[in-house]
Image (cartoon, rainbow over all chains, first blue to last red; front, side, top):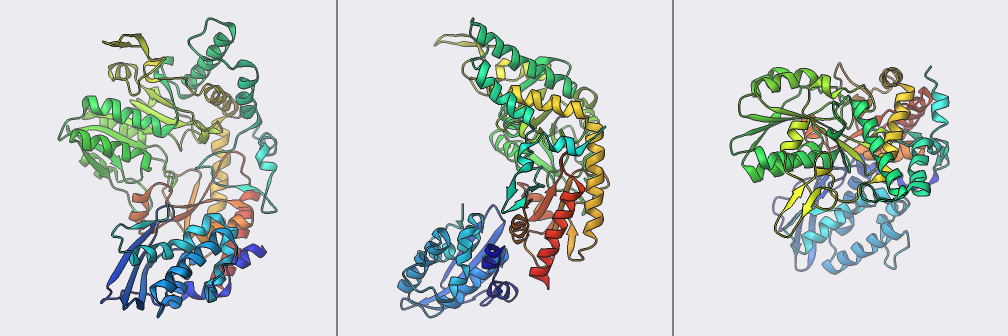
Length: 147
Length: 406
């Protein structure tokens, strides 16, 4: 039960009900799609990257509370960050949700998703948006899947 | 007399706990639990019978062969097949469909031919046909359903023509629980000269099946959904059809004579059983069938129908819950969505209460597309489930509403 409360914190509910930066970014210069074929979750991520910095970022899609909240939190945290900072956050986040270890880098509000590491079946939900980000930043044209 | 407590006592896993709560297993459409007799049959084979079949002159090989072939007889009688050699052991229903699609399809399908499938097929009864359609130039046609999850039989009949060569139809939908009128559909398909493959993966544990009365040309099911082991399943095919079909896989056991110039193939059923089969699995599947027969499918169906009704009544206590699949003739599957909560979140919260259900698309994405939902939560029943299991499900679902919809 305590694990469940760790997973579903109020912040997660809040972002699930009211996702931030939700919608299409018409003048985006980076875009990628992510799928979680087992869940049917799908995500479109739009970015405006200028001078090595994420100027704006939005997402669209459907998914569970964990995947929606994770995408919403990610867009909040990444806005204004340099690509190097985004890369470091990706690695730190990945480490946190897969191993449960506290990463060396400060993840800020992303830490509310630390509880996911106790639910291996849900790691994919939390990381879908981040894998999609990775594809967008590396200009991958293939849709990302979590499988 | 159907005694659920006595039945539960035969399933060791039902005594276990999950996350500190007693296991409430409601994921039977994915796989069923195994009674002690099935577990014993499998381990007994390795304890005292282990030898390869159909090839040794020694006593142990003979005994293993006898046990393996006895399982074939059990299956033959269970599904009412006319001949024992019409029972082919496969890895499961999926492999059985692949066998027919590949062997029969390659030999018989031509450009312009049509394969008729239903909107509610499981991927295993879609994708093998797509592959063979691509290779042969045949086309796939789809029988639509309505929003209760019932097939449109008028459309079905309109789709049938002399071009229709195969009807692939599930007897029970894994995602919706709909029972399809396969007897009627087989009759109609035969009138235009089409063959019919019935996917019995979800029906075989809930109702009596008689392939001779159905007059289906092929019937497939998996052992693990019938209280038997994983990795073993059955293809039933009419003898004349199987005889005319080329081998699917090649290797030992399926040949008469091999030279580097040419090989000749064994007779049925061995023509389709290349290599060493899952001997322990086949024997234990025979035991699983005897177990089901000892309880009786009629009583099992009655018990499960009562539970499904009970679940439908309980569902009215949650206004946000919408049942997906409300066909008049329906068994064992309680598939639903809840406004404002994704099925995966439902699944995780139920799991924390020890309640195991399936969440996702149930390998039936076209069904999800039809209802315009990404996934459902699905509780599915088996003979050992109880009203207490359904109560536990709804206690957990009320917890979901407290957390998500307060």
